[in-house]
Length: 318
Image 1 (cartoon, rainbow, N blue to C red):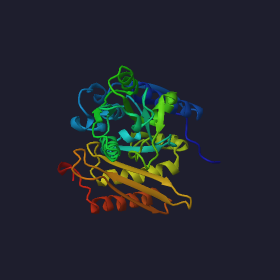
Image 2 (image 1 turned 90 degrees about the horizontal axis):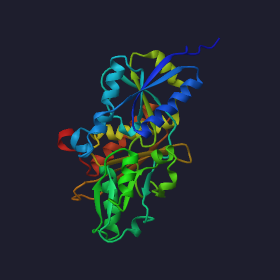
Image 3 (image 1 turned 135 degrees about the horizontal axis):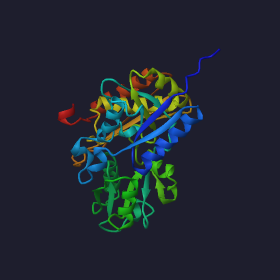
């Protein structure tokens, strides 16, 4: 008889933002459908508490996962559900990425009450984003339009906070991940979804990852039915580029992989300079990919091509 994993009692560590709770509830429902008993442990992370400085200045997106990992380490929780683009490229010793789920829309979304797109921005408009990647790509597009008058200002806080700041008139438009808006039923707020040619996504954007202690073989087996191999290979290639380039959100790096018509994986990457002293560098490569190791090899080649084209990680992380 085929072996089926035993039903487990599973506690999910999650941030308490509305989007994080949606993600955790989504995983909870799937695991309960497999016969497991699941509860949530809501937590506030340091990344949620520090809202007056950009992430790149206070330690990066790892601030969103550290407290959740402590809960796994001391046994208060069994798994942690993350937006994969918030997960550091190197997990601490003793932890493992046990599952990558099917990807939502990985693209960037333009949200504005009055402007249908960049071309509609009034003189001296303000656009909000929390991402150095988006800042660089927006600046490049605006400069190409001769719109040096438009300011790109930092935007922190959870999704609802960012939308509130837009609605209060602090920004003319903001750029967010389409996936979060769609997951929370806020797709009607999206005025435009950027094609990857317009705004190349971040590594792992739109995908959910589930982290466990590496010694929990029972949980890894229980999570196996939730794994989406095609998504995992895409994000493995993307995250390898980021890891090879320094692995920090202080880098203005985009990396996006998708399956081509012939079944090959096409990986595109872009690198910019937030200070505008260097043009945006873009490279791409493709390969037949059937395993995570082959996806990571493609990522390494693209990272080497980025460096060869002039992309240089920050000195402290090179």
